[in-house]
Length: 119
Length: 322
Image (cartoon, rainbow over all chains, first blue to last red; front, side, top):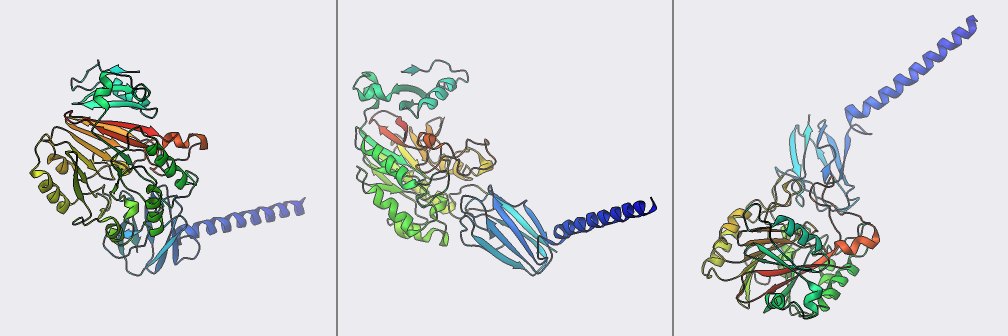
């Protein structure tokens, strides 16, 4: 009986540890950006730039991928960066070295606006 | 089928129920003649047979032309895997018209990615259209590189500034406007101060009885601003045209037919020859709308326009590719 209880406690500890580790693993990307902490991806789809606002640490390379079935562009309103036209599955990357707020839009569909906040 | 407008609830000369009924039948070849805001409808079939009497007198014109739009040459996605075939179907319809159109107006998005070979393909296909000339205005898909320089070099026809121009035909004054360059973040279509100045001077010397036809890609009226389906400075442009007895504005961009009458101005948008788009607000975004294959050609189309000299209104007929 004592041995069984000990095994149960051990099992519970293992399960708890697993939950904590997986929870932390899930939390880490949310804090630092998906995958590699110095890169981040914005999926362009349904005439939207991801969720609109992306917050990243200085030094991050942001990659935009066009998942939409029409072409889009990624153009900074302050002329900091500008992609060429991106057809479906085309990519554009820019590395943000200086902190600040970088509003941008699609020059083909100008109602599509978003921003990158660099901390 | 013919119907006269009898319900004028808003006292503005428009029977909205009749108007909507008319528009719903437009795809099957019903002619809606707009005369000073009053709609009269005649069946295309009735006119084709030579019947209709007074209707024929109202419709047979001295000037006929066709508007096509949004061929998006180069597009190949589930919404339409063969935009060459559907553009050809539109050209076949043009060639089957009883009256050969004097010319074709293409209201933009000729290409899908502003590529030379895409423009080449459209030029080649349109050579097979039974007409004398094709006039173009660019869509936003035609000016993707270099702020539209390639488009202007190719189709600029000696036009000044950003590629806008006008010409006269059988006493009707046609104006091709460009509202797809220098688009601002969060903005709509835009004409810009230079073009507005040019437009004001272009019409200044015309008598108010000159029928005016304006064609541009993005609608010059507020169809659905949330999706960019409007032009931010169109009100100023239209103010220069207010004094004219007959103004027809032909647009594309929204890939569906829509019509509005405001005083002496009739606004009309054409269907695409490539793919349909959803009705305003009926989808999360205005992108290509996939429909069952057998329905596609019902939602694509072209527009015939007839002008009767001496009559104010232009008769605008939408036909699908089905």
